Structure formats: structure tokens, C-alpha cells
Amino acid sequence: MRYAISGVASGQYEQSLLICSLLRKLETEFEILAAAHLYQLSKKMGALKSSIKKVEQACYTFQIRGSEYPKEVYMQIIKDHQDKYEQNVQCIYE
Image (cartoon, rainbow, N blue to C red):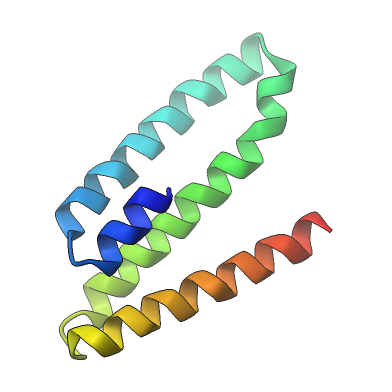
């Protein structure tokens, strides 16, 4: 997840989309395993879903906002978005 976010921030958008796609595939496969066999894995699915959501939001922000702002401004938008998301996640788990 961090690799995908840093890829978006550094302008490697295609790579971040590939990582996002991989995370979605992993989620699908883990859902099947968790539901059928591994109760402990189902507990970790929340963290995986949270990571996927974060990567999707970063990719979406890049796609929508990337052409509107200079690179420096855009990188600050991504960083602010990431910080806000991490604060929300911490509030949920506390």
C-alpha cells in the first residue's frame, strides 16, 4: 500500500494502478479463504480493505486533480489526503 501511494506521489500512476488491481485480486481470494477456513484471516480483512480504499482514493485524486495543478501542489494534496486518511483510521481503531 505504501509503495502504491508513494508511486502516485512520484508520478508513477500506471504502477499504482497495477498495485491497486493486485490488492483487489488478493482481497477477493482472501475473502474466499477467510469465509471458508480461516477465522483469524477474516479479522485482518478490515486492514486490507482499508489499504485498498486508501490506494483507490490516491489514484482517483491523481486522476481528477493531476491535470489541474502543478506537480508540487499535487504532491502536497496527496500528502494531506494521506495524513487525513491515517487520522481517520486511527480514530476508528481507538
